Amino acid sequence: MKRLMIGVILIALVAATTGTGCQATRYQQIRDSLEPYGVEVTGADVKWTFLIPTSVVLGLNAIIWNGSDYPLEIERASYTVYIGG
Image (cartoon, rainbow, N blue to C red):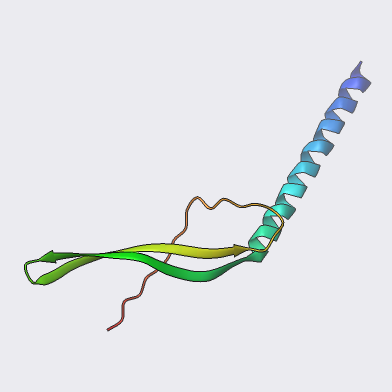
C-alpha cells in the first residue's frame, strides 16, 4: 500500500513539474515575440473654460503584435505620453 501511495505521489509530482515547465516556456515565447507597433489616436475631447482650454482627453489604441503561436489577452498596459511645444 505504501508503494502505491509513493508511486501516485511521484507521478503527481512529475506531472505538476512538467506542466509548470511547459507553461513557463509558453510565457517566455510570448514575451520574446511581443512587439509594440505604435499607438493610434481615436479621438480627442478638449474641455474649455471660457476661451482657455483646460484639459484634453485623448482616446488611444495600442497596437501590439503577438508573433507567438499562443493567444494572449492583455488586461492592463501603461503608456507614457509626452507633450512637446
